[in-house]
Structure formats: structure tokens, C-alpha cells
Amino acid sequence: KNSLPLFVEDCNELKKKINSKCCEVLKGYKTPAYNNKSIRTKVYTDIYAQVKREFGVSRSSSIKHIYIEKALEIVSNYEPPTYLVNEIYNENNQIPFSDLGATAYL
Image (cartoon, rainbow, N blue to C red; front, side, top):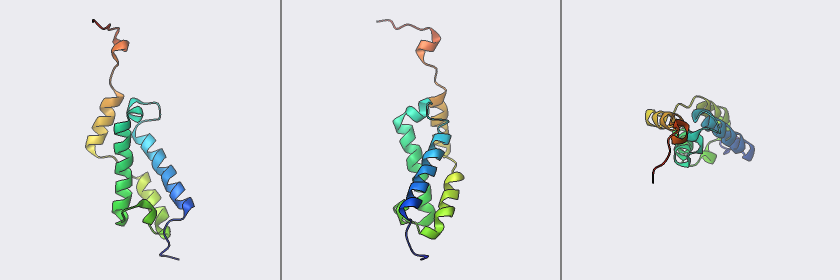
């Protein structure tokens, strides 16, 4: 029993936790950073990479079932690297030209 891989329910729970953490890191679903596919993908990729690295597996579904609680804890405690923090901050704090009252000159 200790060598069984994650069950489908475990994989779904882990995925749900990762989705939630990604949203938290990006500061919400409606933020510019969340809506920037490139930044959002980097965050998802980094969280999954952290989980896989911790257990020495190439796929998160290869984690042993007995480690699901540890995997969820790792996701809960995830902190993005500095470069991602900066990208998220910059994206979320850009002021659109329309908010400045600027008009385009053609």
C-alpha cells in the first residue's frame, strides 16, 4: 500500500490546491498578472516543478499516495522566486494609458 501512486482523487485534490495557490500568488483571477498567459504559465510550471523536485519524480501523478499530505503542504508553503514576484508586481501595477486620459496621436 505504501508504494501506490496517487489516486485519481489525490491528483484532483493536488491540482485544485495548485490552482488555488497560483491564483493567490497572482493576486486573484481578475488581475492583469492572472490574465497574462505567459506569467500565469510560469507560476503553474514553477509550482509543479517544485512538487516534482521535492519527490524526485518526473510527473506529479508519480508521487506515492502516502505523501499526498506532504505534497499539499509543499504547495501551501510555495513561495515564487524573486523574478516571478517582480513580473507579477510589474504586471499588476501597470497603469493603462486610458486611465491617464491620454489619447493616441496617429
